[in-house]
View 1 (cartoon, rainbow, N blue to C red):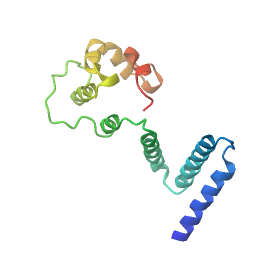
View 2 (tube, rainbow, N blue to C red):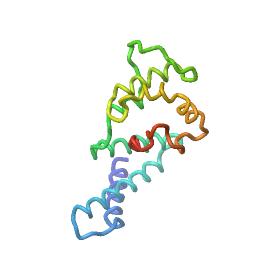
View 3 (cartoon, helix red, strand yellow):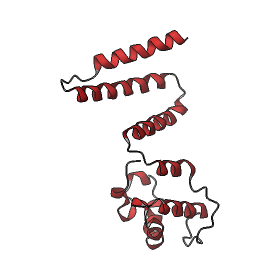
View 4 (cartoon, rainbow, N blue to C red):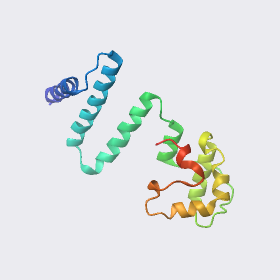
Length: 155
């Protein structure tokens, strides 16, 4: 089995070398090879996993690439995966439509700083706009309130 795996990876690598875009500038050529190799590796792995696991694999691969490029905010990733796990009490939730856990999570986001600085006050001040966005059938396809669509990274 080990020999089969090694041969398969060698085949993928050779395929990436042969089918990637050619360029006389070495850094550009290497970038094209890496992009093609990444795609071929992704397709190869996806052939061997269940459909239900493909999205998880895609997410993991994407975060690893972003980490390698230095574009992954690990604090945001940690929040995305865990939410606010703190045992500290937060201010009472003033927003009726929001669950207390959501309010606690907004407190954690606010503490991350950067584009999230002031997020909790923003939620309080513009809760009607946030409620409208929250109630959208596909909120990911609608502009976020208060310019957050432009402020936030794609992650």
